Image 1 (cartoon, each protein chain N blue to C red):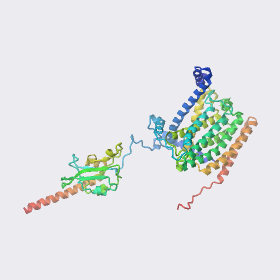
Image 2 (spheres, rainbow over the protein chains, first blue to last red):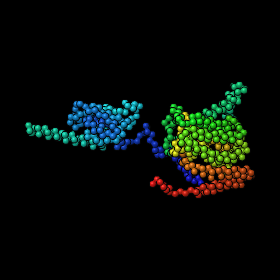
Image 3 (cartoon, each protein chain N blue to C red):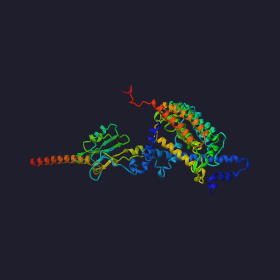
Image 4 (tube, each protein chain N blue to C red):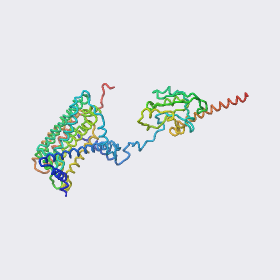
Length: 190
Length: 391
């Protein structure tokens, strides 16, 4: 009969209306600032610079090689290389970035900088509540704002961080072995 | 005590007016009523917008607005401030005078509708002898303003919306008025006050509302469908179908003019609900004889809120019609039913009271409904749609 389907529809919407007061499961909305969903491990938004130890300037892994600057598709990274050198994470003497800026309003979170970095120095962050009313000062992040400890990286991306740490440890061991061999040769020759 | 509560606002008005000079008393009396209507229905509009959004949210298993104030009840204030602070843009090619006049006239016409609605015993702004006629005459001004808005904007979407609105409103005005005529026949008067008084009696504890007769019920359903179409509400919101023509006739309106359109539309909806209550649901009269001690205006607003809830429920349930479905429904279903309903009302009037009257009139309503429904359904072919060009 005419109107059967309409009547069914009315029953359905009425059931939804009253049901949403009776059963919490019906309301799938997460009330964001108060409630949050846990982030998945692969969450990423903007890059940050990893440092080892406590002093972000001394422990900075970045050597200012500028590969990420060149690879960055939207060109949001700006690096100025230092004149002097300091020992890097592995122990070699390296340059370091005198200036390292990322304009996160330009960054498109593609993670290419992370992929190309040979020094495990730049990684993706998960912090997303970054709104600001200052477009130029607030969104152009300098070295100090970008630097975060390796422990933080281990906290947000445990699997990736473990792999990265293992790689660095391996390289460090290699370098140390090489240095040892070198000193031994020197000693043998001596 | 009950009597005083019932006539509280009437007495209050008299007390205030008594302070005015004798020759200005009727003027002040009307002025007070006008102010009361403006305040009450503007507030009702504000409350309805938030209740509607919350109701629709619950129907779709969402929370709805719940950020501004406790449970989101202050949302209308935020909306109002927002629409007041937005830029008022008038298109360069627009007919600026008409473009400005359209929303103003819409709200003006919508408020004029309330002049003839009796909100309670002795609570009517103007007891016109041709109250129902006045109501329909003024409500057709609203159609004109919608066309003004669409035409003056010089925008194809506005014009499409306006054309749809005119086609729809003229089509549905016919069954709307035909459905109301049954009540006028039964009450023998065009005055809204007389119509309500005619329904205010009781048999046992049950009231003499017209909706509790076969023709009254059919008339009420037809009236409500046509009223939904008249007030441009879903599922008849083709003139402003945002998925098809942006916002229809008010595409080119921003800021407070947009808010005025919104206000006008809701006021129109309240007014036509009020008329539906007056015609079919006994206006301000109580639903049972033992409840007559409750003030009459309470019943009017309780019924009005119920009608608004039904409008929201309908909006949350039904999808928008297509233009040909809309027209077919108006001319092939609504119009024959409304015409037959006139006959039913006449038969009801001249048959003696009793079971026979109920049986005959009930059949006169149900049989055409079923037959027309079948006839309409014969044309429907539900089959897999074949796309000629898209594949």
